[in-house]
Length: 119
Image (cartoon, rainbow, N blue to C red; front, top):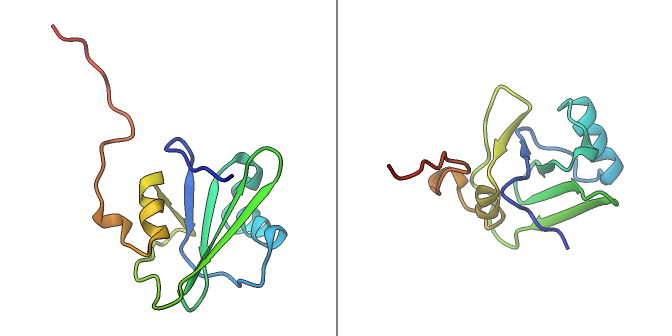
């Protein structure tokens, strides 16, 4: 089972990719276009040109997971724009994106904060 934890690095491809690509093709995109190691456990998220589907590629230590979600109606209205090839999302923001929502409109506690003892 694929489980995305808050500690995982999530990279979202800004530009759409050809959805005929499978695991090997998307891993090659991770290496060449993003300069990232697909075996590092990073969660890579891609969308198709029509913005009706997303694919998630992640290596879990034993093998690759390739998951796809295609919307039955509508499009993914939110997609990041950047001058970089990828942008990062937090795990809870990825969950919102999976629901075709806008992850930038969500707020959560910071991922890490200093704990100070009471004086």
